[in-house]
Length: 404
Image 1 (cartoon, rainbow, N blue to C red):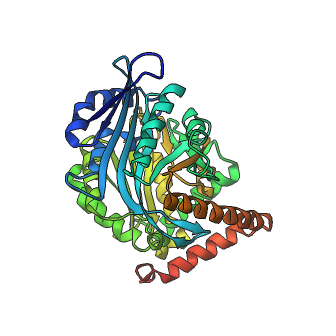
Image 2 (tube, rainbow, N blue to C red; image 1 turned 135 degrees about the horizontal axis):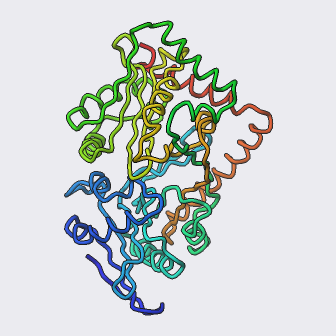
Image 3 (tube, rainbow, N blue to C red; image 1 turned 45 degrees about the horizontal axis):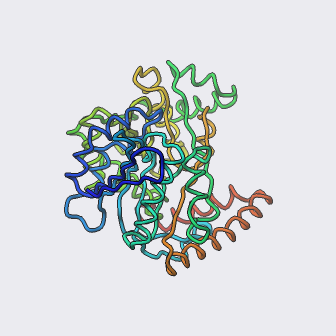
């Protein structure tokens, strides 16, 4: 555990960097107390879920936790991990270049303690030291709220060449949960209410008594759940982008932990005993967090993903332990339809003050500028929807699992 003091600010400041499992366990109580004090804690920053993402002895992913204290009192805790992974540079949906960089990845919701300016300055100072000392090439902060102090400081304090330019703002959607599904329907226009209810009736009419929704919540159900969801996900266009649900050791460990804690809620829609769609979420503190969703394109005309999601919402409305459902990253038409809360987020990058990382920063920013210009033109001519549909259909056509 690396310690250091800094007397540039009022009081006695201490920076503690925990890089081993033993060092992390030594600050477990502090971490858990700070996480519980967050107004909107995320499962990504939970200590046990975090520990399930790193394995002892792994060279690919290593823990890195930065704790800042003032006069012995915890002021901020940054939850990160050091990993080497491809840094994708894209133009539209096409990946042009994918260099591998050593990265300090700060998890979503991973800055705890609601720090103020002095504390952020110390966090940046420690991260800058790691960049300067070649411990990492890049710091990545996953989706900071653009109206937060963290975003303001992290996008202005680093030097101009090391600062990630043109951060891409994204809308993040959430829906507050009423007592009943009927109350939720009343938020929508009469036309939308009618259309959504008609979808459910149409599927039930086409397959009477041959439709069921199975909800998995128990630890001994995890393996079966993972197998079914992976089977469906392999048939989706997301699998062509390596962004769909994947059956691997990390996923199983994380879901087993979630089930053990009573957080897991995985729903699968079966038609004639065949898995057609799934919805995977965690209930953490006062919110449900959507992790993955997918459907078999064979059942596309019945909009089975929407049917299952409506069933899922109905099952969690009135849950006294939850106040909202968080849709996760990314904007989408269906999220806008259901949501009543929205905020903007952007990921923040800080590059090491060395030639190669700065070159990657310039290349990435130049590509993003071109991409933004093309998006503006496409949006002006109203072709966004057509391009997305064509792209997804093209990916689906290339997916052998989705054309069986």
